[in-house]
Length: 505
Image 1: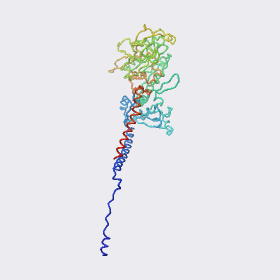
Image 2: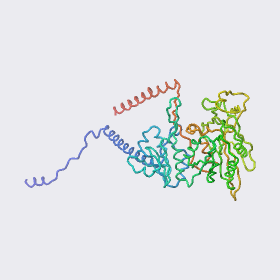
Image 3: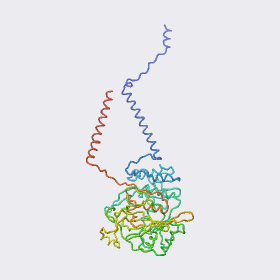
């Protein structure tokens, strides 16, 4: 009996099999667990995808600009231009990234600048806080740097862009207030890149000594587009034969015969040609026999009077004419819907099409609705008595023209040009600043064409003016019914049906 009990004690006991709690077998737990697991996996996946996309978007253009005028998108012209660059370029933004991201209008400037690095691995975007990097400004002792400015550099070459130059503004003459109208970031960065990568930059000489009209708005535009400007008096200083172009802006004293000879010698350039003279006239000028004869010798006649248009005009003045025709060979393709502002223009005529190796062409002309008011002398006094008349000469009229002399130097075809413009207001500072006008584009493209210099590319400022949404009363009611009534009801009914189905499962 004792042995039997000992044997029984040595026999291991059989353990009971573990059973899951009853709630685990419930249908609601199984579905709930699956939903929870799926939710966790989905959230983790979203986080990982977001991290990956954020990392890739800093290097590759993954975003899509859905704005009407693509105000946040780099243009195809700029992309094509920068993709050809094979040297390292730094775009230093002198601010924290958040300063640009959170600033109205400047956030779109930042989005455009970031796309340069996305389209070319040689281009790098750097954010530099001047307060945290006090030694940075010492690298540019000639510059007065301010927070949010831009420095574009390549090697020892650099260009400083003020943050205010990234945007274009218009001023209200009544209130004096300014409104941001355009984003000019793309043009500024393109030009800066062209500057820091250029092997040489053209010099342009501005004539002085004849009481010429102020050219600062034109020369400022040219300097921003990589032209080197110098001012000289032809009579006392002579001509800089290294210059590519001479600008003569509406003088009130005529040029002497000796100075005209100097212009001829400049254009001939010892048989090498490759030079340009840019003559600007104004309806209010006194007669300039020598300068006008010089233009006529090149096939461009400078008329008298002022062009007006009662139909095709800008704002309220008959003398603020809009262009009707442009020559794409010189001005390129202009943005659709934009126009050039031809204010107080003197008419030009082409005296011949081709003669002695010189060909002429119109660059900008008015519409056929334009007419010529020619009282003999144009000034504020005569203008006060202006009245349109059926007898006034009808247009169109040339207001910007070019004459080109083609010759052979050795085995090479060479050219020199004479540009003639009939209005000093064409490059008025307020006109140049208007993103809705094509004056600056026409000037820069024409100069680039005749000089043979590529300052980068010319793109119009992106329009930032607000466009009002206009809807009818019927459309307004439909929007309220759909989004305020039908859509909420549909969501409520869908949620209720799903809840009832799950409740009875």
